[in-house]
Length: 524
Image (cartoon, rainbow, N blue to C red):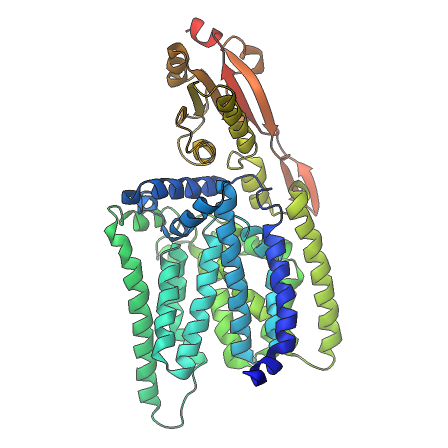
């Protein structure tokens, strides 16, 4: 033990600050970013599942695997803020990914410096900082992905059954998290590249290796089939069809959307990597391929094949769809530091620039996200459109204050939509308030919805929460329809990057919080 401590002492002393840095970047101002549509849905599901054990498979109703929501339930008991609770789970899975990157990097290359640098790159990359701070399943999927690769590689190299079983558990965790975990199962045979082939009895070695794959796949899909206990297991495959083209798509239209989506993924890596990450990846692959052929090819397949297939078959594309490949790309980028001689100074300079660039972007992500250089698709979804939950917490606070001042009052809050940012984003804060009812009342309103008019006639204090882009009643007619504006929450400016400049491209959306006055029912 003393020998091991002495051998790893310097690595531990350097690793602990990286771990603390990663935690700090992920925990600081954790609820600063407005709640996103899918976050609202996942947190609301977790609350319902917590309250009613018979609904533990509720996410299957929308074709989603429930492991992330299951994992969130204990944190809902610990933290009073449901958004913090959901995002805290992603912080923990992000740290799990970081540890997996360190372990995998060291195991493949037997180089502590590369393992530490891989950990540092992941810890500060804006790509990972952004998604490890959101209550989305993608951080958990990335964690299970890197650990499936790591444990499967150890099993293949040592032919140990226990590691094959552990890989099966992590594969099962991935399959219970999100459908792209299928890539981890498909790529399992690539562990051929890292196994230690004997000089004799290679056929027997291969048979043993195939046996370990069977064990891993059996355990993984055995865990996945727990979902068959849910009544709507079939919805997973049905909903997947909404996001993925059929297999024959490559024969019908091989370059559409492959080319634009591949270009968009490169944009994500360039802007959120940030850019030098891509350069490190290229250097790591090209210049290390000869000396570390099997390891580089192994990691490259896990990193690049899912990106290529996703670009070809995905019907839509956002950065989180390829986030699970980031750990593999980070390992490839760190492998560039295996180079010696004249490359050392150049790579060190590049690393210094990467760190400065990453911290500059992270500062904006954590304190002034509207100024952060987000890709257009990400800025639109997380900050500008109806999917961004700007103002929802403010609305909830006003309603809670109303109840505090008038405990016996009955309040009804109608929101646009029926599912997603609203009403789920508001319901997560009003979850346990018995005399507040939150209901979805539809989209594109050109009149006051009937359920809210009925509520007002009944004598309830009645409110309406709606995005300005979906309210078709003009400002001049608000009084006529009985709408009194209580508060307004402007969203981010609609900006789009063009030729390295951000240009304004449309009207700024806002979240309106109205109270219905007596005029609403008197004009009916």
